[in-house]
Length: 355
Image (cartoon, rainbow, N blue to C red; front, side, top):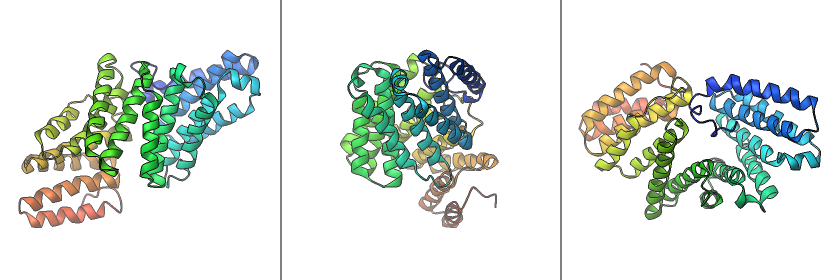
């Protein structure tokens, strides 16, 4: 039922949603009819957590906030004995983690740091003694620590504390052979590599961490080729690794790998569009980095034109025009560089414009 356990369904949240909803309705009815049955209660909590996760994947933020509050309320109403039997704190942690992600994605992003820290504390305090023998709890703690990293960086800009949380996330699943643990290990290692490279300027540590994270995700993708979560995560870190290698043919080769990825079922959703545009912008930047400005410009123009239909966010538009401005400035086309720079500046105010 969890987000990474249904092999082959991870890339199609829209198709999964009605089945998860049906499971949730069934478990809710069965649990209400037999309130003392711990197995039914645990099944209901698992279904609620899966439904909550899907709302974030589908960008249904209002429904996601409702689902999170319902899961929090369900864990709160359990008596202590039932709560311990079904590991209610684990699901409470899930609710806070997903709620933090949803609030971060919502306009303003208010409260995400507080919510994420609640998510980490819930699982860590309750299960510290058995953490190393339960892969599900190890994965949950790594997830909590990694989301805490993100919220610390966004809300407080606290790099040393964020780096420490990233190391904790890596350590939480170190040596765990379960696929969910391995996925979290690769994810946390990639995040740590990004922090060490960009924020702490530990180049000798950051790039090897990124390489290892990409390699771990690629290994998971080979074992489970239908799991688009693994392949997309590998691509995201591959793009970042390419950015650390700008000016080299290796950067071009890494970015080109992402251009060959097969679109998932979420290709028509906002997440899918944004992922596509990021891969193209990184590839174009890599081409610029080795002096292939004409190739880079051609690709960037196509990306910008194709993206107008779905209104990319201002950061993506800014990045695309920034690369165009650089290419024209380097090649001496200062008039066009000025046009691109003006459009780049406009991206700070809103989505791509057609004029």
